[in-house]
Amino acid sequence: MGKPRREHPCNWGYLSFGLRFLTRGLALAGGLVSMISRGPFGSQWFCGSAVLILHGKGWESRVGDICLKLPLGLHRAPIVLGIGVLQKCAGLIMGWLLGSAVNGKLLLLPGKFLLLPSKLPVLLSTSPQFFSLQMMKFAWDNYKLYALGKNELRPLTKNGHIGNMFGGLRGATVVDALDTLYIMELEEEFQEAKKWVEKSFDLNVNGEASLFEVNIRYVGGLLATYYLTGEEVFKSKALELGEKLLPAFNTPTGIPRGVINLGSGMSWSWGWASAGSSILAEFGTLHLEFLHLSELSGNPVFAEKVMNIRKVLNRVEKPQGLYPNFLSPVTGNWVQHHVSIGGLGDSFYEYLIKSWLMSDKKDSEAKKMYDDALEAIEKHLVKKSAGGLTYIAEWRGGVLDHKMGHLACFSGGMIALGAEHAGEERKQHYMDLAAEITSTCHESYAHTKLGPEAFRFDAGTEAMATRLSERYYILRPEVVESYMYMWRLTHDPKYRQWGWEVVKALEKHCRVEAGFSGIRDVYTTTPTHDNMQQSFFLAETLKYLYLLFCEDDVLSLDDWVFNTEAHPLPVNHTNFKASVQQ
Ligand code: DMJ
Image 1 (cartoon, rainbow, N blue to C red):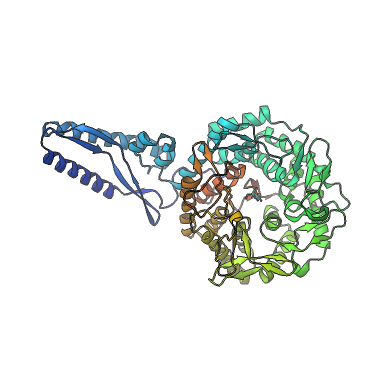
Image 2: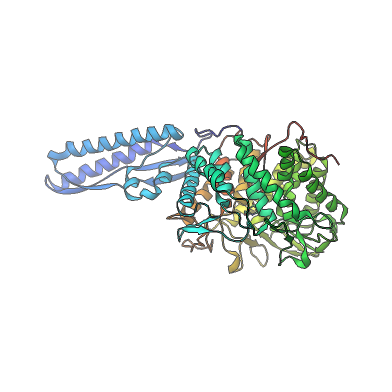
């Protein structure tokens, strides 16, 4: 892996010395005037630094507000000046110390330290990269303090949440956070997480797990950490867990069912999935991890299972070339004609293009499936709103629902990734489409700079949630995921600017005393919190924000693909031994 660099790679984080001296000068002059006008024995508030910081193209102001009430008099002026000089020197020295540890351009505000100690690390930083690193540390530290070993942190009530998605497995946040901690070089925190995996991560559990969630979060997280660190414990846990998922594939077609008991191996479909069907985004989001499981174990069974899914999908007729979201694991036929590039469908498409990339562009079958699917999506689902926003609608048996889920916002990044490798005549077209969709998703963030779970484009609505029940934001990553890909593939600074907006909004609306929480309404500036710090916030949202501000060679897109939970898996530059040649 290219190591993340601490120095900031672009023009962000400049401290404006001129303005700093100007504001200091004005403060000092004001103090002197006031001192003289009050006579030699008055008292005066003496306030510390006022600072302006330049972030990219926009100005970000932070005002240091340490204030001391000092008895002033002309005869004490040297003391006041002395304190001012000392304060300034201390600030510069600490700033230099921290700054050289971070990016050499760090700003220190002693006043903030005294007034807002819990926010200190974040307020100290002017580098968005360091900012996201500190957010990760804050999220992890609180999880460790209040919920270590549970699946998620409940940051308002300061306890843990277990839920029923992982079949008795614990520590979803630990496993999801491992590679992010490692990539950010949060060494101590990474060791804490590793220790938990070594000592407390128990795979002998007996409960109902989502095959999809266990695969993308646990198997993906363990595999990625193994590839990054080379430490055996992650590999052996990934393989052991992978074995436990195999019974889900024991169906007449080999299309796995969605739920599996990790102890007994019994599997079944979700109660809410129509007619016992399996979900496209679930059985279609196993390929990357399962090929790596075969590669690492030398056992082709994992690769065979996912290659068989391909076969079934290639056999079944696709309405207008589209892939509906529900398929029967018994007959191998579609159960319902609902098509979506958001929830229920999303990562199936993502894994087609990434399978091709991960195979070092050899898996031409995956590429063809992706190209054909995208063509059908563009023909039938991509629309422009009255206000000129490009969006991807959902399709219900031929009828369009003019709505996009937050989940669908990953598609800007995916389409850009694919565009890179489209034929010359399509390249620019797909890049434009990717940019337009990403811009629409940015538009959905317009109000508080965080966006709703779903937004609509009908009856004059432009990228806004129209139902109360769709206004929530649960720390999801898809929009910043697309910013990250768009930045890497275009280097248009607006994507960093937009990412920085999200960082600030997360700080403002989602940071609570003991971690980060989702919010219930993105259209209010004083939102209520849902008391949940999702594990994907650490796996994805913060990782993508961090990578958005890193150099391109940190987890280069030439050498890594990110699974759908943002766990990086290496591109196979040397041909997998275990890959199945069909
Ligand atoms: C993540 O678990 C994954 O990105 C998944 O593919 C979709 N949903 C969440 C985050 O929103």
